Amino acid sequence: MKGLLVKESLADPRVLDLLLVTSSESWQIKNAASYQPTVWTAISFETDASQSDAIADKLSHALKAQGWYINASTETHVYVIFPNKVFKYLEGDTIARGEAARYALSIGVPQDQLDWDE
Image (tube, rainbow, N blue to C red; front, side, top):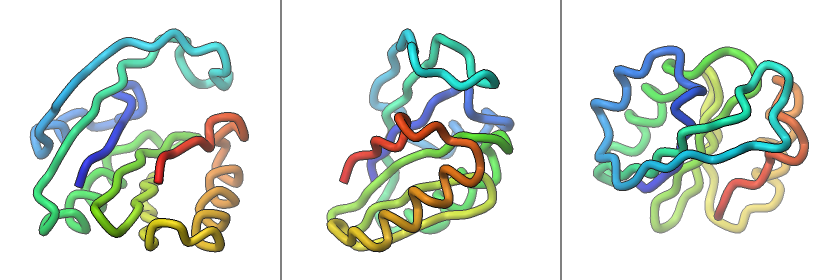
């Protein structure tokens, strides 16, 4: 599984110890919500594909409660990881992506931040 997370979204940064961090960079954010900082530390990561479901679950328990998500994918599946909830769907499944997007909006993710890769 390969993915991207924002370090500032983590309530428990110890979860980073479970990941192979492949890159890290700072982003200046113009569309930050009021509860989000304007500078984000974007962390690209990888994990063993056989551990994808377990890692996604652990990441979901490490996120701050409001308005954050982590996106990741394997060769076949997309993971959109929210606080205490994981959406996993086949790449290209527009119905499942829509369900994840609606959920994201319901927990305060701004519309213009619903830009995860597939």
